[in-house]
Length: 437
Figure 1 (cartoon, one colour):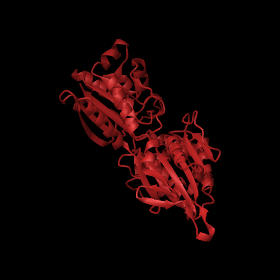
Figure 2 (figure 1 turned 30 degrees about the horizontal axis):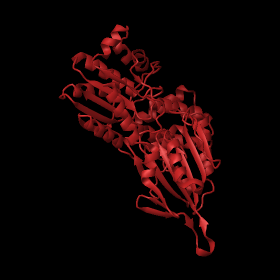
Figure 3 (figure 1 turned 180 degrees about the vertical axis):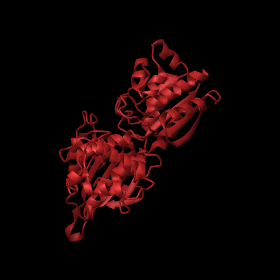
Figure 4 (figure 1 turned 90 degrees about the vertical axis):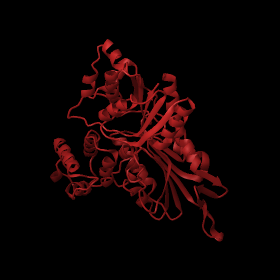
């Protein structure tokens, strides 16, 4: 069974390989860049003054490196300036030409390097003209990796504006509470200065642990950052922006992916890969292996432990040789001062394992963060079956205690049931595969 699971994971990740995704949507035809049905001439100007277009590439996110490599392989020296910003340890043994700058910064909470990355993006776009064409390769994780904060006035407006569906009164109160607990007093700050990094970190940590969806978290980020919410496009001014988007958000909303860096009507945004493609690849291979696969949803959300129980209950009702596939991204609502270590995928797997143990019906459930890292851990997820809890008891492990403490990572580490696959170079949210042998 482990061989089958590994093959299904490999198929899912191959289907959303960012390098290939770019190549599938762009090609060079002489002096023309062809993007889908759009043809962009790379030489602009009148006959008496032909000029090459000012072509730049900005790649940000966990998939930034393969996306940028794909652009470079296609356009080479035509790219006059390139900037790649990705997560720490994602640039190992990667080389770009001198005209490209590469940076690593922090995720999921920004750090000083994130601020530096934001400055570099801002500076690279400072002198754009109507000859400029920016190819913006956007993938999940960019919200924390690239930060260009607005001033304190913007944060004050967010907290004092009428609540909306995206930013509720509860969210406003959460932000106010965390600022207060961090000893950040609005009356003592210069409202024209940029929001401080400690404030951004406190807000980010609180939002990530609140159980809010990524769409609602990114709605906050979009209002307090100069590049987010379409700010990158505004910075380009008279130039053109083409966003090449690898989606890690349910439903693929441009305004939520990477907090909407290219979310403007006059930018052209092209979806190059998403969760559905990965789920379809799992289904295709499962069918070839003699199973009856079903993609239940690609909009799976909600509390991870609840979803784990639901998935376990669903698979044990299925006939043999069934595979149920779920795509999306769950959340974990962490209590104050939580010391547990884990992520949404290992927490979902732990809840599923407990439910499978109750019923004792043969079934396997695998969880996978497609970027290779589940929450703050180095695991992508875990695999469980109806014997997982018995194996844990034999080692003296208490599954329910681990679940209640949100401490799923060390639980599965002792069982050696974690998926440690390293940075995958892609990011299209999560996949859960449940199998009835």
